[in-house]
Length: 544
Image 1 (cartoon, rainbow, N blue to C red):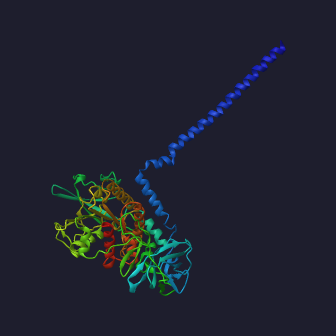
Image 2 (image 1 turned 120 degrees about the horizontal axis):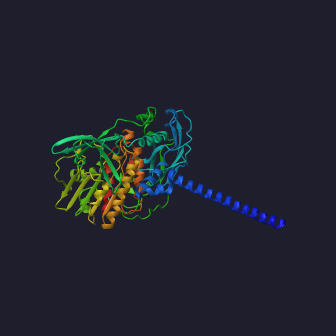
Image 3 (image 1 turned 45 degrees about the vertical axis):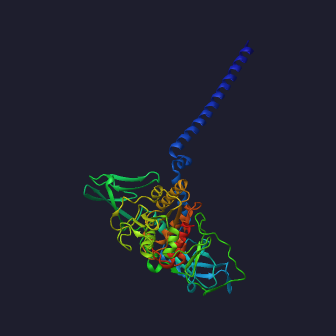
């Protein structure tokens, strides 16, 4: 009996131990699951997964951000300490990478650029804004070059050789890398260095209010939003005036700089666009053997645009990828434009086209406009030639527009919306340009506008695939214009955006930046042979 009792007790004790062990294992298991679940819940609430962040953005926002990040990678990560340690154009040097007596057409002339600071110390990083050019003045010939940055203070510039003769290398240090970094930071330190005043009108009464891409005062505002393009600007609501009564707009300089006092020395006149002295004289280029140029197609939309996209010879632009037709006389243009509708949408560099047609070669007459020259340059214009069945329209690209007096604002639709309203067709030509009026604002404003124009062109091609669309990049302008508002570095970043955005679409692409760098243009409205070449390329695309 005793042994049986002991056995029973032993069994109960063993069973209790097993139950306790199972309980403890279950407890730890569930505790781990609970902690893991709690951790996931807290992580989701406090730090949303990156996938969800990306999913909250629209497709357009994702594209804009990606383009911005691509540009930002090109900006040097340097800090300004003092002027003397920045790149000096006068102390830097340009030399031949492979010196020889003569060079051959079809080869590249490669030059080495070594940079030094104002104290004579060798620079150890890159990122300088350099503008290269190869030219023969007596031949009216010029071409730009491709820059390779070794990120150690040295660069190589590759110039393709297209003509025989004595050629000269001309390389400008436009801004040092420290200046590039400062300009990029300043441009994105606010929502623009240009402000706007809107004029509201109601039953003969007027009032004004500040407007812009962002308004910071805690007041009632009017939102003017384009939902399709995801673009908006705002005005403070004028008391007693509905938002719909906005009629006129005026731009003004905010008179606020986002550069430090010390940084501004880099942008004073003697320090902008300084020529880097070459260590050699003119280079001789000859025709070596039987050099035959590969056949090229006629210039037509959809060809894309390499870089360099062409060169001047005898002051005529020669695209490297297509054969351009020369348009000079009224008869030349009328053979292209008779029976056509031409829509010019952009800034004053396209207003220049309208002036050429109406006041220069006089193939059309203004309709309901009696001015001339740059008077009222901001106005929308129409011109007609009834005999030749030609209609020409010029309209601005929409907000923003830099203009120091009030102008009628209601007809300023975004370029994309103007394209959406166009029926298109084989007898319709649309030329678009934008850039100069966007230099005052963060580059994302320009990027979004460029993508929206492309989307509108894609919609146009669905309903009217035979419409001719030409995109003209902005050109270089005055060297000594205010760098934060109108400087060419801002223009260059926008130029890179347009090159990227309009790849792989059936448009004609006028690389006006390349054409004006090659010609050393320093005015906002190119003149003489440069303007003639821009016009010839535009209408080679339009009338192919």
